[in-house]
Length: 188
Image 1: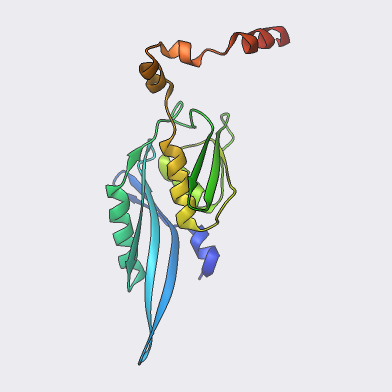
Image 2 (image 1 turned 30 degrees about the vertical axis):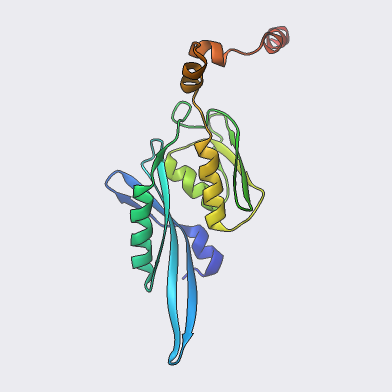
């Protein structure tokens, strides 16, 4: 049986209809009472549909399965939609911060895969991202990493949304500046 961090990183993947849930971490705490110790467990779960919707939740209970069930229910209630480019990567590079957690996420070309550690990998797999490069530069606490990842994903804006806000066409928003276009043509 995996112990400690190995168990945390292993994750647990189950299909719930169309939803995929990943167990990110389980933490055991002990309360010392007259007859000995009373153990409690907390679980962190990420749930997604693999098509751009994802949520996270945490649950506490005396038994692991009950803590996981509570976390999964909370994750399903907290799902958010994230705009994806071509359904496989991010529209632009983004940073996320929560407490001492700091993560950087970058869009990647096709075939790159998910280059990310533990808790962030679980979020990207549940979200349905196929190509992304991510780095955690702050806290390694799974709760802070997941919350920082969600803060970054919440800051992503699709070109269609930006164009609507500015009153322009999507092609105008995506067009490269004149200097870059001229340099690219000369190089070709």
